[in-house]
Length: 508
Image (cartoon, rainbow, N blue to C red; front, side, top):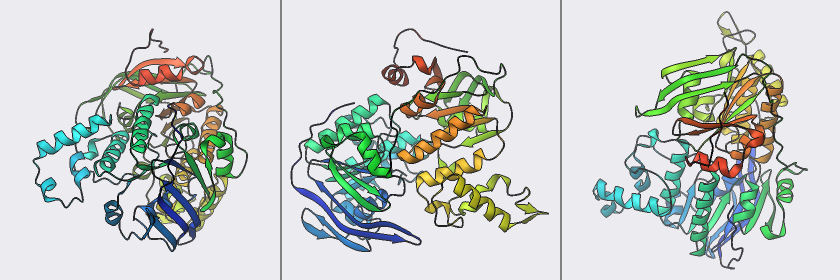
């Protein structure tokens, strides 16, 4: 990880004092204090639902505070729309992207511009300008491609490029490295350090404490909608930050999964044979992929987003046809989707309704074609307690929950149904330390109970912590499969980028 110069100026670009924001049944921010200095990279930490995103949404004009004051370069401001915040020099890269899927990358970047010269610029010329900007910051993206054809990682790059294009004085990044390899994350960090050295004030929201300690000058921690404190990174440890976030002792030591040298069963729980799958653009996304997952083991798929993970996931669950090859599942399949909102939940439905989506026509939730609300509600209450889902009520719309609690709803629904195989795609994406601990514990418990688990993740720490074996996926092909005990982070990162690292190791 790249280290940073920890010196900062004393010029306060942003001051937020006494910020309150309440939603029905939820006090998201309560008397929050936060300040950001010129040339500073300032981390904002907290569990999911702690109020981080709400606070930054207030700063970028998506919400107005119920109380409190915001100052920009010492002058009081009150943004009533994102347009006003952008005009003042504030840009935000949201965790859940603010993109129009049918528009191209270039169209999304210039969306909202009123400069007639930009709007009349020939598309080819605009594409060249944006491509040059993207290349300058090492952001691999094609300006002419519609956003709906991009992977999650590529869409994140569009959001970063959009903010850089608008020359923001304040840049807010929500989990910016979540889908990057260690090498790509280091490159992004160098970019952020360059921007900070030029005077840009940066808010860095991340759950990766090592990353925060390496790149950020100061850290502000929120818990339950309130400010716990602000500390200088040089004066604290990862452990102290974690305990400030959750209010209890946290075990941060990475423990390797107790890998099985030989699976207990000779019969795979999930088997992929000579699999070929096409992308949305009818290009080869998965090529001659062979993989077996046995009962009682976790096989991790490591790779950068955009190398066939989404297509592989959709092919296994039947949402995308395979052009060639076989997919064999022994028993019932539980699915933890990579995009919890578009594939796993109905955001306008309640928590209770989402918990019975796959069994709503089965007893005890229905009888002779009629729903039985008492059975649905009692089932939901039990699962909310069992899976520690924070929600004002089981009748609350699931779209109102934090990302971590929304993920727990999916886990509760999928893992309490009969299953022998689990497909877990990006299960901890965007989750805080506490939620990640919970998710990992659930997967390990299922493995120990005999389930075969295919884990698709761009988080190497997650892959290393959970997997018994690791398969590296690059451009739709598995480059190698290694036992976790023999895996090396740097070598895996290079293989994820398609680089040769010596003798290729494969296992059946």
